[in-house]
Image 1: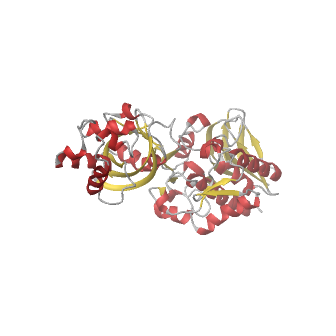
Image 2: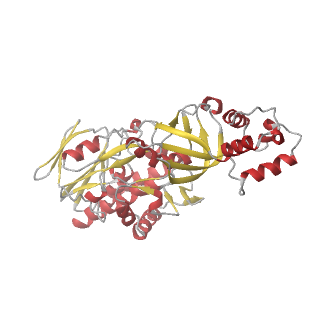
Amino acid sequence: MSDIIIIGGGPSGIVTAIKAKNKNNNVIVLEKNNTPLKKLLLTGNGKCNYFNEIFSTKNYHSMNIDIVDKIISDKNLNGVKEFFDELGIIPKIKNGYYYPFSSQATTIKNVLLREAELKGVNIICNSEVLDIEKKDKFIIKCTDKEYTCDKLVISMGSKAYPKTGSDGLGYSLLKKLGHGIIKPLPALVQLTSNFKYLKDIDGVRTDVYMELFEDDKYIDSESGELQFTNYGISGICTFNLSNYVTRGLDEGRSEVIKINLVPFIETLITPWMDQYSKKNSNKNLTELLEGFLNYKLVNMILKVSNLKGTNYYKDLTNEEKLELCKNLRSLKIEITGTKSFDNSQICNGGVPLSEINYQTMESNIVKDLYITGELLDMNGNCGGYNLTTCWISGLLAGKDIGDSND
């Protein structure tokens, strides 16, 4: 009989436990909180977006993106779908996003915990790990007692959203055991700016097309809803671009986002505005722009363009028209920072993928040590990509442990 300990009762930890448990393995999950899967309940605004129809390395960020491609293989992705199918989860698919048909994250939580219970997994809550040593076996010192095990899985989560128990201790423990750590930074997080008129447009939500420029070089773009705040910008588009921004700012690069507030205009904007203004020649600039923009955005655009709302478009000089059109099509927002780990959904950085066996999630540095979930340097965009990392890494680690002691 082999003793297996999994530190962390999050998604990857619980899935690892389910797959690792067999008649020859005694599996214990040590969970810091008073209940496992606490953070899972927050995903997808409580609906749990647990998978996606479309996967590619474009949806991920890592210093070893070539290894990411091997981890999100068709075989592993099919394994995730088969796993949830076997658990009886019926998906509701919306725009490629997978949710449980109940639209409740508690459905995923309850099914996973029930499966762990049926398998005979022992989940110990309110057990906070203090230290780990590796001798003949692993020695795990906790607040409640000291444990030993033959194989150890560290699934402790990142530093993101520490209210759920992710305090970053896993990085320190893994570093002590010999692993390198790529500096963890907030990701899928709001961006801050010193843009002059943020207070004027605080709370406005609008559909946009956004482009990120780093040291004046184009990096990536996003389309969808943007939310302006009194400190900067938020929304899914912002979160996805933040994966680049957070690392770039930390390395001293300039980060600028250009926002197209009129993505519905598919032609050149200047002739479009000329035609639109002719059809509405009786309207001044404020009245004209309110035909397609939130009134707060209208006032902001006029201020940025140094124009009066009582003016008429036909009376503007060519330079004034070009300035107005430029700000509508490419509003420049300089990014000065990000919100903290308290606001971030995940982290950018972690254990280099080069230091693990991507087929089993076993450490290449410490034998019988496995690393899963958010601790890995493999963070994804919004859309179920980060949970899928947890599912895949948990399934791979659990299967390897279970098979080796079957």
